[in-house]
Image (cartoon, helix red, strand yellow):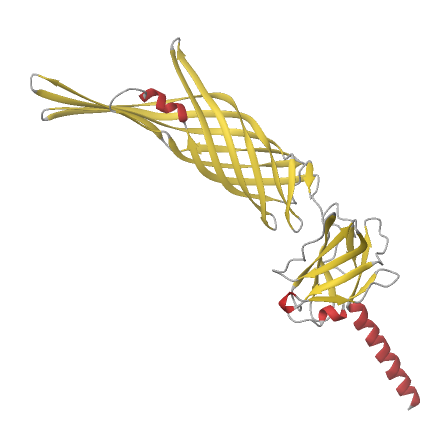
Length: 363
């Protein structure tokens, strides 16, 4: 009987130890050294700050009291760390979805240490700390990590694709109607773009297509002779199809929220373009009318330049904003030249295999 009681006591101790370990993770710095001077704070209902037990000498954090708070189970909890020049103590805040840490003091820096998850029986690491963060968790991951690395960050090599739509503007098309009575211009049309290609750190290299809708000039003239009038209408309309090579340098990364960064930079490259359109006319006089049209098709190669903004949305998806400018020129014969400047403003979505990165980051 005594043996049975002894075994039961040992089993109970092992069970308690396993339960305690299931509620513990280890906080370390960038060098793998345990962080033992941190103050751990959770935000409960009503934005009430709740202090949690400190870490032990090994940096192990007891999260049993955090697991006991309301609305914690099956929720991803983000951990952010404040370090202030005027306060040597490290403060870590555990944030539920929708919560924000209190505004930090002057001369403070805020870092993200990752995201953890309580499944009702154990704590696991759901997301690692972003690259550059001096703190991260060690412990059991929600999904196995083959490399054993605990810090997630952008890879030097990446593959990205982008699809955008917006507005194309051909501003100097209106020059054809300058001071010409009865002439009107429609110099704005839709624009579509799609591209895909590799990235090397902050550099993107993509290949794709660019297309616009029709823009046009319409000239209407009315003539009157011997009491009779005639009306003539001439319309030139065309659209642009192009194959483009995109070279982009994501110069600046601005931290937006969490570990998400807005990337900004210049872009440019060659454009192999084709203009397709029609010249049409219509004439009416008295009770008779006539008309006709002629199709044209020509092209060339030119350079383009612009700017790019990439805003993270979720996971591998980002929203994009692009400005592009090109000048399309083609000479038919001496004195007969097609020359149009074209601006485009595009909004779209970018998909990347790994997190995009920038050359310089503002935290």
